[in-house]
Image 1 (cartoon, rainbow, N blue to C red):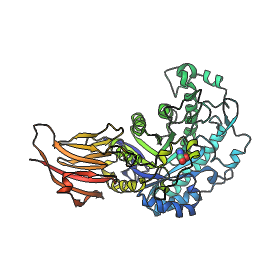
Image 2: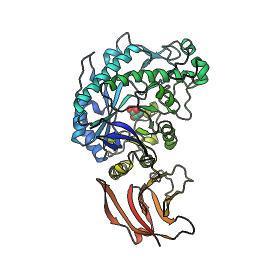
Image 3: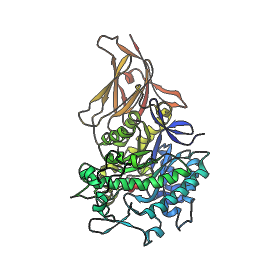
Length: 511
Ligand code: DGJ
């Protein structure tokens, strides 16, 4: 059996797991949940199982894995692997090492307290609670711990591939400063840009990148540090590895007057190219998406990489539509709403101060009604993975989503007819209309969607009329269609899928 890996195929990039194309229908748990197996048993597994995930996204912490220098304790990792197997799900592990949300809170005490550790500094020379990406010693220590982690996973899991991917660090970059003043700015930016980044020039950072010189320099440092860590881990066990990004919002500016309002130098849309050149051991840069312009962000990441991974997504009703659109439109490897253990709990307001600190709009955390819709979508999508994974660029797959009130619908041209999709009007009470049509054969197709109404029309004005031979609700199980209700009569006059995602199979004919 091959190890999990990414593979370019004729119709898209696929994540191969246990020798088959796979898509992670995932949930990311809260930051602290994996630090206690008792908590996981009581508060996480029962909740995430109800969400029908096939992959759990869970952190592992440097401070717990290497509490004393060179003394390793993998109990938390072992528990995650054993319990994931018991629940028949795969794992994506998040390495909370040197950096988590642009801070260094997960490094072990012995690193935090070591006088040799170099902390980043803001423009006034004040220390930030973030280790400087220029601190080679700390980077080597992190790389050493990470390589031990990967060697341990290999030993435990190589035969089964429960762990399918690893995220290296979490939302890197510099917050509250647009340049790390532990480094001499003038001296650094007067150096020539390294050939690994821009072989075509010998200009200095300042001359070559102009206004964005500081951000490019920080991206170079963070990407170089992550490359050191990832390469050390891959040497032990070469699983696919990715980095995630806290998004720059339109009003965030890297540079005066708002230095470091988002983690500057992290793998944001503008910095993906730099990251990909400097960190070749990283397979993908991935957006964490709590912002409303989902498709703008996903387009920007997909266009630069030919694959898409959404490791963190909002918890509101829009996330269901975004999932459905993303799986039909891009080479989606994994989709993971954040706080997966919360979806079936009574809605609780997330502390507004926490959301402010994380620059997350409170509406993105409004989870009312999201859980059942995701659970239904995941249940139905699981059966479609063999048809979708590695095939998402196929001309037989047509995805759609409503992103503005003026979006009324979509007309999808198939061989013998058009499918006209009417969107339910956008409202805060339900998920935006979204879905995809998958052509199975001539005159036979599946429609998966949410908040849509479907009509068929002849492919041209002069073509013969089109009718339905058979319309069924159902699901795909082990590659076979399992029909449920046959929809005819009143249920065929108006063909509708509401707030619960649904899958319909059509057979049509011309008369
Ligand atoms: C983004 C981070 O990557 C997550 O670990 C978490 O802190 C969420 N923000 C919000 O809670």
